[in-house]
Length: 31
Image 1 (tube, rainbow, N blue to C red):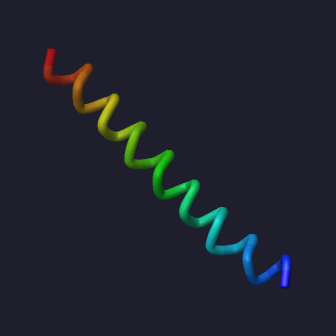
Image 2 (image 1 turned 60 degrees about the horizontal axis):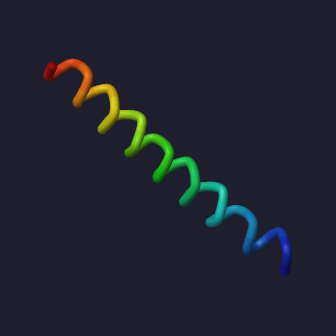
């Protein structure tokens, strides 16, 4: 059970992290 729940959680965390990093980079590049 733990393994099945950990994989989507990690993927979701990486996706959110990537989104915020790209957004932050884009905002800096814009200025």
